[in-house]
Image (cartoon, rainbow, N blue to C red; front, top):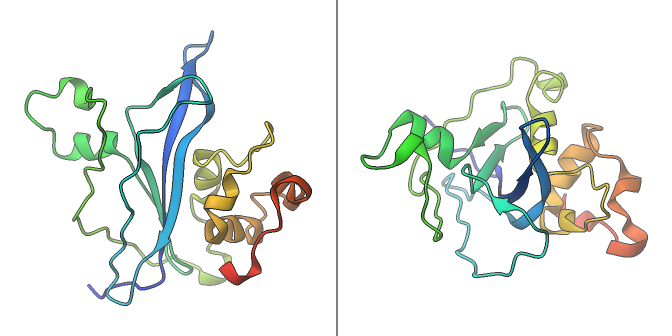
Length: 180
């Protein structure tokens, strides 16, 4: 397995509240960040916090939710919940972390990316729409969170999963073309 340099890695700590229908409703992001894998295929995201919760709701059990994307490969979604489901830790009820100090269970792990079946239309046969939804790119509330994820924002714009007008560049500032 060869390392994959230049893969975009995002992490987000999504805040949710319950709904009358019983499912979670996204209130915003507690924190989001982005990095790229180096020439050895390694990626590093620094620790952060504590931060005040400005959006309401609570951090989900899946946090941090991470997405790994590289052109020509299927995107991968990772979170603590599916990591617990793959190798449960003794004493952790239902695979959820109840600790207020959170960390990624993927730390130090190798993440495998699969080649996309059709590179020209890789966006169409992948779950990039799930990346957009998972990063809450609807931006109905006027969030400028995309500024923390400029490279992934460009990917989602190119895939027509985010509309440029939703970035509210007049208020949030221009998308930095140097992120390309």
